Length: 484
View 1 (cartoon, one colour):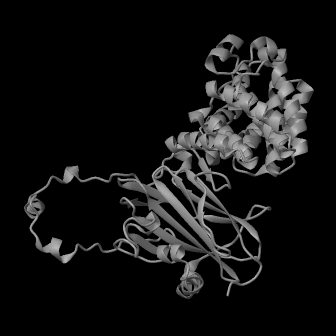
View 2 (view 1 turned 90 degrees about the horizontal axis):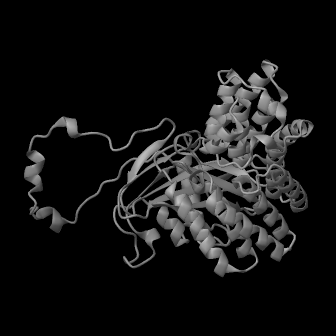
View 3 (view 1 turned 180 degrees about the vertical axis):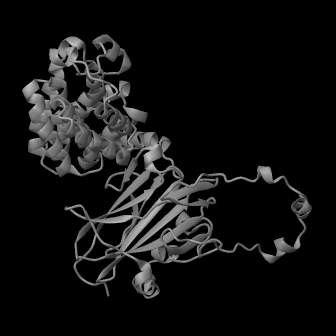
């Protein structure tokens, strides 16, 4: 969507159609845009233009927090300066894309609808297609397949009128239509549209190929749902391969751009140790595996989050606080400050519930060596682990067995340690970013933390765990009774 919006902006700024076409991958030409947009130049130094350009650049790079701020400023400026209606519509469309990406579907739908009313008056087919695509995506995420199908078909028609039928956004529109058809059991038709969408996205994969990865994931979930695992698995793996290249575990999303990993049935990365009451679910992204469980403590939820380095080299990791969302309303549950409650007693309550479940019991222990199973056992037991309040970990002693400690090092490490050194070569390997708690993990080392949330006795919830520029989402089900 960003490509076509940038093309419109270039036209608004006085750029000719041929220049715009070479600057972007859009297939629109000047002759297909409304004449008033071509002839009426915009001042590129205007405050609205600066806010809008910054917002669309940040949106393209998936830096959603910064994009939201810039686009809200552009909307405010468009209103205050009594700018053209198309300026306000462009800002609303781009902000709708931010809300769509951050899963605020109702807000996104409202913005797209407001922008669409303006675009229809001006008969801007490309922008009509953008807004209708955004509305269709919001509908499909809200499980309104019939509405999504109708709106996606209208968006496809608008893109065709604008000669944009080979663009990234057109492919995404085909994918939304395929999802809607799949939800209504029109399987052959859905397969055709998914194939067309993926074929286009191979040539126009979007920023860092992440748009391509998103549609690969949608197609994989579709094939998994109809039982065609042979076709679903390679699509999943290709999607994860693209995402893994974009993972930056020590950098915040406003620097490196958001990457999302969802725990979903059918995905080869969505694994768990099943349990009737307290399943442990985990996802691997890049060099780390994130495991999570939610324990019902009656008036509180106790949340366990374990981060493990599964590579053979040291990994630098930065974390912020997780959040627990009530579903389907998607409002945040209240995080409880552990220093204002007797969190030691609450940890003991969790232990009393989970100590007979070996996977959960093991990650709740601080250990300096391997766990209590042989080396060939499951790797969730391997390596040192530090347990504590999430994001507030200290260090733990590491001691060599006595036989190694008594033997002199053949590399003469003792003598090297006594030698003088140049202080100029001592430096930090990683920069610390504001808002991130950073630490290093050795191979198979873990950090396990506990968080507490108020329990409104909801049944379905989603745990969001931001680590670096990655957001992990885990769905959980809680019974409306106390676990004894």
